[in-house]
Image (cartoon, rainbow over all chains, first blue to last red):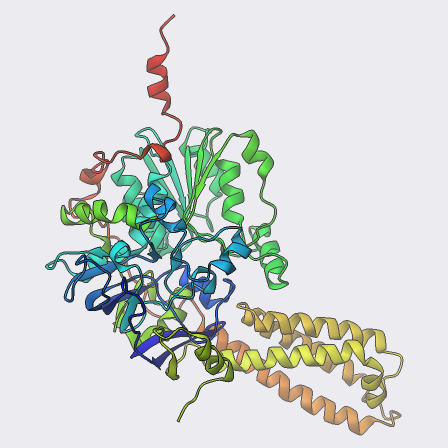
Length: 391
Length: 199
């Protein structure tokens, strides 16, 4: 089959690889009908996430049709089922899964020893996201083996196009959880840094959950335009001072809820000298993450407020103003998304037409155009915001 | 016929039975400008290390004895350019190489005096420097064009609300959602105020 394969920094290829095979009774093989490139795939593209190996198949936003099943599924899945495959692989049986903390499943990471060493304790296995999270081949491919399939996948009905359902695999639940864990109240101003795909989903989630004001921060005109279309007040940080504008919008009090949809690769610009400092340290391997957004959020957030972090951080970040965070009594909530906790509810909201997540798709191309699209997405060319690949 | 790198072949061996293994490599994201930038980056590192560790060999070959400290400084600069050229910010690295080439040429030109017994070596070094400057310049321009945000169409997303019923109708449409108890935060001010008896 064909698959998008990581070969090194900025080197992704559409390779011919062997087909995946069932390894365990709870496995299924899914024939992929649609998959997408995620913003967090760019961290792999840039080689900022450790423990990648040449030959790793990428992709963690996938959906398709079950074409082969293991013998231990107890009839929960059968050939022909249409499924969305969340990026988190979950056993459904461990203590964390039972609590709904699926992204820290204790059993699904088959390279637990690595995660134990690096993180202190293992987290869930993820598709196509380094050997720290199990080294599972991803879904930017024609076929995908799904381990623990009976507890991992979400069955979806026929009759709704892939484009509306595909993002249940990651960015929609990620944006939703980012907003939900901020516990948005009708009087809240919610400030969202980053208007990429996760930022756009977070904006829609905050609107659906009834925030009084949603403010979106970015500098790319097309992304700000899409954010505005979704009901956000926008701040272009190339043109305005983010802190001053947020204070102005909140009567000088600062937003109650701040959400970081950027993560470890903040935009670098001389007008924000700390970003240049971070980039220099990152190049010298003295720091892995560029936490400009964290600094700005801590500074501007209202005392007693909450900071929600769906953006991916990979390792070590420097100069986090913990003094301000502690003295202001801020609450931090973060983590990979517990996708399975939200998918059924979000599927209902799509069916009821509360939201149509396909709005974010700007490019739909065959799988073999994937390598080129990684570059285009990274360079933000052709007004690219979200790429869907068709194997 | 396989076209796999040794690292890919090696990693194929480590994969479990049911995992896909690469058979043949296809179209790639890395183009000629990026590959050339990597080559130039490694070249910078090698040259920089040589300048740092063996400056006397270079000054002797060019008849520039006494300039060893300067060569060492240039070596450090070259290593900096190399690291940048190998990084995601390769364009910055390539332009820093172009600037460095200018400095190198200006410095080597000073050795082109008639009384220098190594004048022939200086001429060869200058020719090489001019050649590498041309390569650096071409690659810096090529990567700038290839990664320019200006490439492609400018599209409008003004109509992409994502709400089939419109933004206004969607505000608070998910109020039926009950925040799980483990994700609740401080109550809003209005809710707290209600609990305070009026004085």
